[in-house]
Length: 254
Image 1 (cartoon, helix red, strand yellow):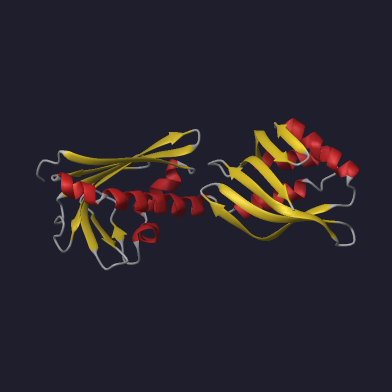
Image 2 (tube, rainbow, N blue to C red):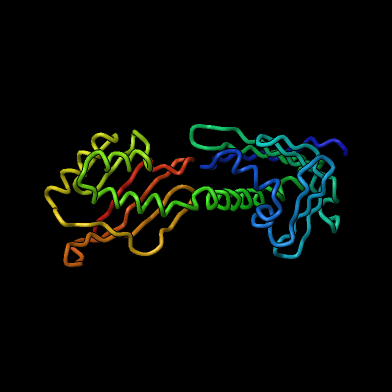
């Protein structure tokens, strides 16, 4: 490979464990979900890498280095030879574990600055797509956490309520709605107890499928009385951490 003095650098945070992120560089099904049908990678030094873009273009490369779950390096070029032939550039992806999940750093090295500039928007788009694909897998069970949250608001026994909330939420959970501005698990547990005393017989139900994007979840809900009459409805915004636990909830009634 010739000298590659021109580089493109991008960094982003993904709310998932490095092990979850790295699987998308070593598993053909996940690799193809990112790049497109027919894309594949042999995740070992000397292995073949190919990307089939939706427009029919194909990129080829050779895997140079694999260090799970921290680093993968491969060459990159186009089967057509334009704008660069196979082997003419090098991609390095590194993962760093953080409190929020994984910090991904990408470096793409080129021999020519003009070719580098042609790839800036492409990587901006592809890494955004990648973050969503990884997050969709990492938070595949988000609806279970949401349903458990609503169920906690119907548990009269404080120990059982506390057990469930501690299982699905972080100790420093934040909750906001028209009637509450809370920080911390103890405050939340007591607040729910008060709601049960003042609104006996009311149960919360999720309505419809959740909507999710990179750890933020929207869920419609309804407050229903013992005669199945909807007394209130609204939407809650859940923020989940990389472990899938609830960090904050903001509820909007309508």
